[in-house]
Image 1 (tube, helix red, strand yellow):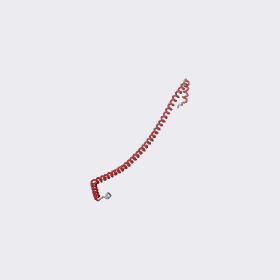
Image 2 (cartoon, rainbow, N blue to C red):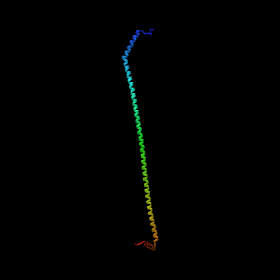
Image 3 (cartoon, one colour):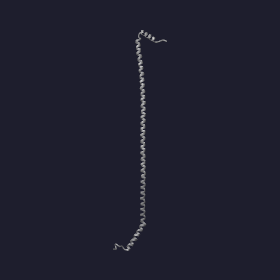
Image 4 (cartoon, one colour):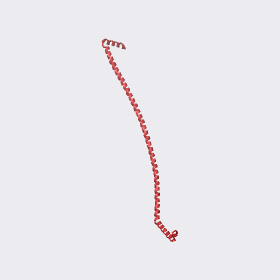
Length: 164
């Protein structure tokens, strides 16, 4: 039974040894261990705070990026709209210029046709006049080949002319 029940001396020396070890540990080991634990806790807390700040910064950056992306999309849409408007304006202006140019060319062609027609009519009249003169000259030469016919023609002309 001695093993189950320790003697008073054994308990006394064990308590003194335990107290001495406890004192030595408290004096030399617990302060550095507690200091290391506090430092570790502080560094973990700082890391958590830093991670939280980084998370907030990432959210802010993401929101900023989304805003920049939305602005870029809006600007792109505006540029495309402006480009479409400019294209439509250029097309309508080109159509207007082409229509005016077509009308001008058509008017010029009509004027040229009219001028050519008048020139052709004038040329035709001149040729008819020249041919009429040549025919009349040939007829008169054949009719007035003799002196009797010439005198009869002069007398007929003198009768037609009234002298005042």
